[in-house]
Length: 111
Image (cartoon, rainbow, N blue to C red; front, side, top):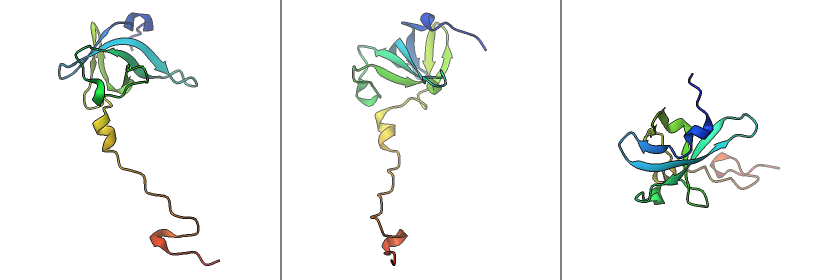
């Protein structure tokens, strides 16, 4: 495993494996308990339409570390693992909660 200093990642360009310029590394977000890097926080490219991407309240892109394919002069992001809003909309919705006192199928419990 090659070790890379976090400070060396600042301002590194992020490009998808299909050639779309996403932006530049702004920061990293960690899990406080495990120390695991969760997301790359990126300043979006000025030509990127961010409406389809997951962003924070400041408009910075949130790119899951699991989407990183390689790190070098640039960071290559796997578009299939990139979190975009259209993919999130297609996630199955949770089943609606049953009213208390009913069983599956809508049958009522006998008290």
